[in-house]
Length: 124
Image (tube, rainbow, N blue to C red; front, side, top):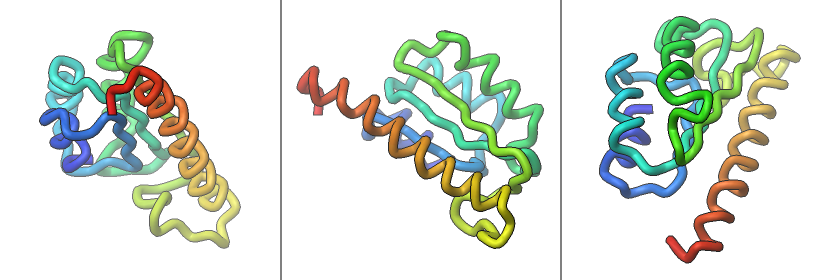
């Protein structure tokens, strides 16, 4: 999360995706994202995450969601998953497997949707 946000703050990336973010200050970093970043943001979140708990997820939604962030914001939520599910999840657990696969699919689709509009506008 931290490195992706820093790259977006510096306008280095055109689209941002984070999964079970860590090292972010909530709400400060999300407020800065709204005022500074231009990259659409996807957050893949989960039920149990001490580094990005449900309260922080709600704060992120309140700051960026509902059309408040013009480039685009989406948060996917995967029930029954814990922090690191998208990279180190227990694939023998059906909920974690579904979360990991769901986060992958959401990420690919988000990049397709947002990079396609950028390349159409010759911004790459």
